[in-house]
Amino acid sequence: MPEDIHWQKYSARYKTYPLDLEAGETAPGMVVCIPVYAEPDLIATMESLRACALPEIQVEVILLFNMSSRMTEAEAETHREAWLACLAWINCHQQEGLKFRPVFMDALPDPRGGVGWARKMVLDAAARLLNQDGIMLCLDSDCTVMQNYLRVVYDYFQSHPACNAVSIYYEHNLEKLGQHEKQAIMQYELHLRYLVHAMRWAGHPFAFQTVGSSMAVRRKGYLSHGGMNTRQAGEDFYFLQKFIEVDSLLEITGTTVFPSSRISHRVPFGTGRAMSKLLPGDAPWMTGDFEVFMLIKPLFHQIDELRKHCGHSGANANISDVIDGLRLHPGIIAFLGEIDFPEHCKEIAMHTSGAISFRRRFFRYFNSFMMIRYMHYMRDHFLPDVSIEQAANELTQMTYADAPPDMSMEEILIHFRNLDRQ
Image 1 (cartoon, rainbow, N blue to C red):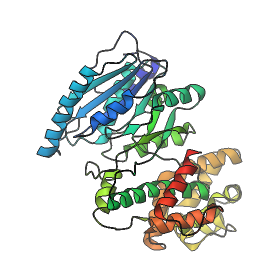
Image 2 (image 1 turned 120 degrees about the horizontal axis):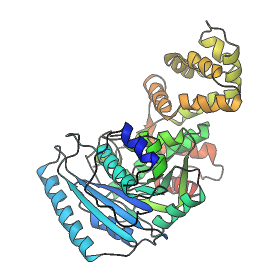
Image 3 (image 1 turned 180 degrees about the horizontal axis):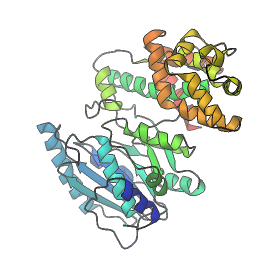
Image 4 (image 1 turned 30 degrees about the vertical axis):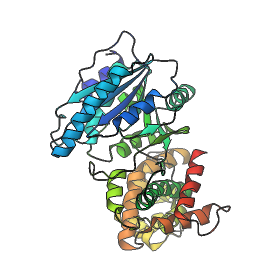
């Protein structure tokens, strides 16, 4: 284990659970971190990594097989079979520059388990093995990757020294899917892309994809930001927000991760859960009405005006004193009152010295979590959710003049994918 100041501070503050991994003579420069839970297609993931072009460093892959008290007998059997298949595969596929390290755990520290615990343990293990400037890639055991995946991620961190974390471009493979399966995964992926594009269009600077199977983090950044959380789901979203809010997260679009599109009940939400909700049948995926983003946009585009109001408001100012002249929709005004917005803005104004610092601190307050709260409020009181096809079409027609009207679901998804690759 590299006994540097970053690890010393991290391990002194946060509980760690060392895995049974022996350090090699040379510390790797990159580790791919894969939690494995009852995964029948793990070998495809390993083959995909083995096919990758390697950077000029030692790369290792940690596969953490984690059991859970929630496993069914069938899942436990699949888990054991995957373990044996993994050992047999590794025995036959040794490769210079790329080392696979499987670890089997009968139970996680929390008996309820969860992907957050699994990710934390495998990432902590990677931090122990890596050299001080190393990179940790998060991948799931049902994903495949492009052959340039490892090299592109490594080169990107090398050329962006201020970047501590990245969101990597992904897309679900639509080939070999039945009609219902294809329709379902297109809706879910379009939902994820729509939310990011709609937030960006509205002027929110924290709009990024936060998918656990397509992200990477610099070791120093991981340790200094407190590591991975142990949530049973959504751990990726909460983890990346820490980097987003300090402007140290960027996007890699020069390679692709291909997550699985199959049904899964392992976590309360995510791709697998979405597929189980949408299948069987042709049920539409419901999402936030695009008007929700249209209504919040005037607020985000009047931050300087808001700062002036906050700076000149007295101690007893009410909501009308703070937002007077901003011409906001009644629904926005109602929500701002719900979250005690004027007081927060006055506090931000008191602790900032200029427009740039006010804006930065404002969005750390009105961050992605607040956006979710806002969307839920508008859904419950003013604008019910609509189908993703309707919402994405409205965003497309409003923001992209070259987009033809009434595009099909697949055409809209391809349009968003093309935008996200740029």
